[in-house]
Structures are given as C-alpha cells and as structure tokens.
Image (cartoon, rainbow, N blue to C red; front, side, top):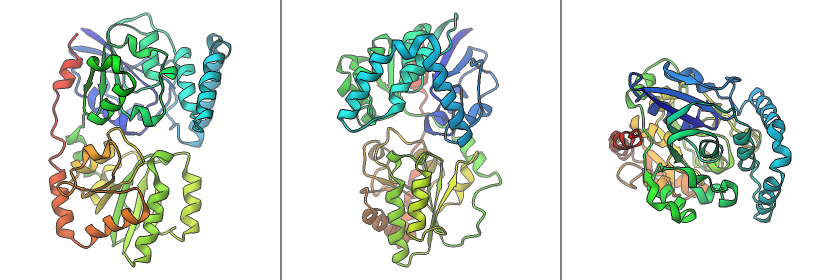
Length: 398
C-alpha cells in the first residue's frame, strides 16, 4: 500500500480546504494509506475528513482560526514555534530582511513571515512517504520541501503568486525540492512562472476537484435563510478579509437601496475585517439590508435559496465559492480580476463587473430587470464544472 502525506496550513472552512476534502474523498483507502498534517494544528473541518485519513498532529484545536478563541490558540502556537529549536534567534535575519522589504513596499504581511517559523517548528516524522503533497503555498510548501522524506513531492498553488505578496526571498528556494507544481488555473500558472521561470516545465494546471453530488445533497438539508425575507436575496461567500473587498459591495448595496430595489445581501464568512465592515454597514443605515451571517457549517442551503450570487473581490486564484454557485445553477456576477475572468464567460454563464460600487450596482440591476436572462445564465453555469480526474491520476503516479 502506497503512503501519501498531505500538508495544509490550516483546516478551516475556506476554498482550498473544501477542495482538499473533495480530493481526499476520491482516494481509495484500499490502495493508499493517507495521512494529513495541519501546520497550525487548527481548524474546524477536521470532522469532515474521510475516516481513513490519519491526522498526524499530536496537538490539535477544532476552533476556527478566525474566531476569538481560535486567535488565542493561534497566538500560542506562534509563540511556541518561535521558541522551538531556537527559531527566534536562528530566523531573526530572515524575518528582519523580509520585514524591511515589506515595509519598503508599504505592505507588511505578518502571515507570510510566520509561515517559515511555523514550518521550521513543525513536528518531524520518520516515515518515508511515496508521495508528499503541500496543498497550499507558503508554510505547507516550505514544510514538505525541507522537512518531509518522500520519493515524490508535489505542491499546489491556489493564488495569484505575485499579487498575493510571495517573493523568492520568502520562499528561500523551496521549489527546488518539489517535483511537480500544480496551479489551480491558467492565470495562477502564468503568474507563478513569471516569478519562477526556471520551474516552468514542472508546472501544470490542476483544477480544483468538487464533490458535486455532496454539494447538491447537502443543499437539500434543513438550513439556510430564516429571516422570512421575500425580496431578492443576493449571496456572497468568503472570508472577511481585505482581498475580498466587501466594503465595495456594501457601498454598492447602498446604491441599490437608493434606487428603490427590494434586495437583501448576505455574506457567509468570518475574518479580521468584521468590525470595520459592521461600522460601515451601520453608518450607511444598512443593518437590515447587508447581513454578515458568519461562517456556517453547511452553506449549501443558502446557495440553493439565493436568487443571485455576487463575487466582487480584488484578486482570486480560482474561487471554490464561484464553482459552488455554478453547481447550484445560480446567476453569477464577478469582479473583472485575474482568476474570476477564467471562471465566468461574460454573457454566457455569468457577468463581469468592475470593482466599483456603481459597476456592481448596475450589473446587479441588469439581472434584476431581466429575470429570464438571469435564469438562462444560471442554467448555463450548472454545466461549467464537469469533473476531470486526469490530473489526479497523474499526481498519484509514483
């Protein structure tokens, strides 16, 4: 039986983690002994793992890294990581040099610095694996490259590498030790190769795997909206973080209300921008109109019940939430940014808008005024995610 190790940074309710679950569910436990190591040792999706997946972490917390409790746990994990193996002293030059570079660009990203700390502090295992897979860029890739014994090593890239803020100095040569690099979209591949042209021959596109039957099954379960609202429901799903640009959507909602539209906008997700967004919603008088519903265990009844899905973000690799909305046959509006452009064919299975309140508002109104067109776009979107498991078979070839 072949031994496979997957490594991921966290195991919270987010796109990459959802895609990983679908991939793990495709593996035959009669052929593969599957293990998982979560770099932060944290995340609420552990209970969703297939029973045959063995979690290697000796210490694990089921709380979300985005919750107040989860933030406390994460801070303790980072502190332990800094003290482990003399990391604070040994990595001091690395942290200072990269921190100064970030300051120079006026874009300090503490998480990018700490992935190296968490990787170097991670648990070590004597097992030699047939295949080790880093399912995210950053910490999990550093860990697989430098601290795992395996005949073959693979790494996934889920984000626009350049715009996300990764650099060669941060990565410190980790991809030299990776045999296969899988980008989740053509655009992600293109931008990764811009930074690492020497690895171009090893980069392939491996689209996210969706468990379509599971999504549709869970969408029929009890749950979803409970407010009794009878107007048009707009849904967005994503973490409340800066790249998701929910402050722009809130301003768009203000315009929709000023135009007399009978709509209510719901967002599923948590993040560090919640307080700021709540203040904006209150200041604009939208507390009954723009609802931050938080993270939910089963989002699919909301997808089923929503009338329109909007994904107006600053950047994406390949959005799982857009794919889920497509599976559910929803008319979709996305911002015109890298990643999103690959997922929606304008006028065929969705619409693109610019990331401005006016453009979002006008594009939403286009579909509000033409329900037949909205329905047709949703029906086309339903056929967008035909599953192709060729790349999974390639990865498993050892």
